[in-house]
Image (tube, rainbow, N blue to C red; front, side, top):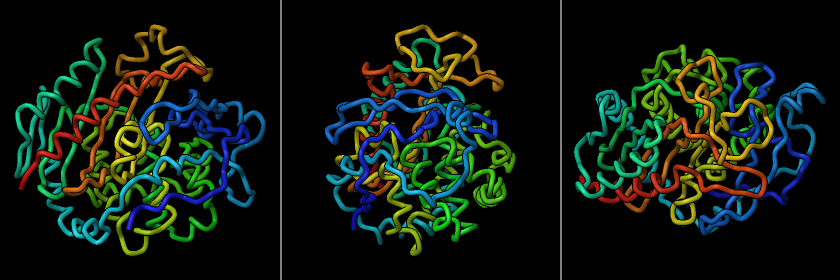
Amino acid sequence: MKIKPVILTAMIASALALGGCGESSDSSSGAGNTSTTAFAAASGTAAEAVTGTSAAESEAESKPEATSSEEEIIDDESAFMKAAPAYDTEKAKSYISAMPEVRELLDGAKADDGMISFGKAAASEAAVSKVKDEIAKLTADGHKVSLIMVDLETQSGVAYKPDIPMCTQSTIKAVYLGSVLDSHPEAYEQHRLDFRKAIVNSNNDSYMGLYDIYGKEPLEKWCEEVGVDKAFAEKSFPRNYSAKDMIKLWTKLYCFLNSDEMQHSEFASYYADSACSATKMMLGAKYPVQTKAGWESGKDTWKNYDPRDTVPEKYCDGDPSNDESATNDTGVVYTDKGPYIFVIYSDIPFSVYYDYIDPNALNDLVVTLNELQAELKA
């Protein structure tokens, strides 16, 4: 049975305040930079751009509240996923019991300098070289990239600097909201629309409203279970934490989304539909995916920006006090040979400017990573 897309009669509407749907802020208002969001057709080509409203602007109009009591028309990308083939949900569930061993494997993946392969299987040198080449292109101008991927069938994968400190941006929303429902199952019926908006549209106000209600404790529990420092949960948008931290939390989210209670739920389907994910864009028409992207323009205000502009150095220098540039992607791809979990972090500015749409910087990297996983054999 496939991941079912959310069936809504939603159309693109200016009523939705996207709230800088990938951008981060540690303030309670959830204010951050806003970018135009690029939505794509199933072919992977950009179809149109939808302009969001800043969280700061929304805050000025009314204080954000976590409530789903009002009907609201919101963007719906479900059509993108309708072409995705089915995946074996029982097989997906079968990997859950081995997740402790997978986490140990991830802990042992050390790649401070360059890229490594780890685990029971290895891809060809050519496949690894293609991933390295894409990373080299992304880092050519001094940008940082951190990557880790683990294939659940072979318990193998690759990593590139997975321990360096990075900012999660809105990728945090995926694991935080899963942890909330794990601890507070009743929260979904109370705040259904906010859960959807925070995942599908990456709405900051909805996420921050839920964070204000449920606090850090749900995510702290997940951190403790998977071996991540509980300080990860201290801020609504963690900074200076690694791709390895995030992928271990995604191993927990994978188990939660594929549990008996959640596997066919509406909530689980939201992850198949999340905005601005390069993996969804490039692979979602071929495989079911569950992803969450995060991004930051790296500009001084929330206003739309031209990606062709030079980004000030202060936004790319690793200083955790700054809102850095970022193009991030995280999640699961359910391929024909089994699922793999991945995290890709970068400090590359997310590039959308009004009707000018720049391809997601991670597009080619996620394709080559998928090709590498296809070669892994137990």
